[in-house]
Image (cartoon, rainbow, N blue to C red):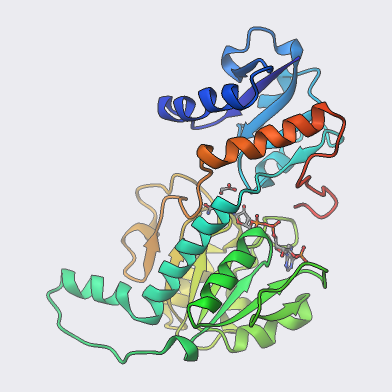
Length: 315
Ligand code: NAP
Ligand code: GLV
């Protein structure tokens, strides 16, 4: 039995970061990049880093998939992956912290107008704006899962008023001081008092296109959007219209329907859009390899791996 790493977009540095660490953490396993695997018929575990659709179809004995990404929407959409094969998400506290850092940077920049000052510098424009207090600034986090909970907690600790939204009531703890809403009925009230909306939902049939004109219109004039989850959550034309009409004042976008974002895309040069190249929270092999090793060990020992995806929910 052996393990194959199926990755799209891994360069030589990525392979050098992952392979020696994985082989050291799982010394009794035979671990190969999928393309170099000496015997595909022996592979029973795949480590999937956003592989191209169809990549795993070459593995007839596949029994367990460990994603190296937190989001598994692309794997779930791959019809060549049999639905009975258990699929575990990457859940690494170090990644949640990275996401909280990105969210804090975006919210601070919006609260204190630092994106505007950066644009003004390019025009040699000396123009102070009124200074807003964090405790009078409301941030709403869509999704209170691994990433959303860490983001909400960090923003609350930095003095913001924080609201969060999740699908259903749950036993999972809500960070202290964070106001929670659940289900679609709760959303309009949360949106009506939002200065910055941060999207950290998984991409599912229910959430695709959720960032659209009716949602933007439910927020106060001058609110801002931060999308750190998936590009397909956003209806791009609706965002461009909301920015042009002055209803939204700025958007910070880390994820896009088409990645890399095409060079001629209007977001690149838009004065009210800040573009990041899908880096809000990257998987760090220094910590993530142990997550992989624990789950591979669990599966080999016939124990249930951690953070299995519930295919009926889509996340
Ligand atoms: P997660 O742990 O699965 O959490 C998902 C949260 O969304 C849960 O709170 C869930 O509600 C809520 N939710 C799901 N469907 C919903 C619906 N229809 N209505 C309301 N709430 C809903 O996910 P995660 O690991 O935090 O990841 C969040 C997002 O970040 C994903 O899209 C992932 O792909 C993305 N991501 C991006 C980057 C990046 O670098 N940009 C890095 C990592 C992850 P319940 O609590 O009720 O289940
Ligand atoms: C990155 O977007 C991830 O899902 O890990």
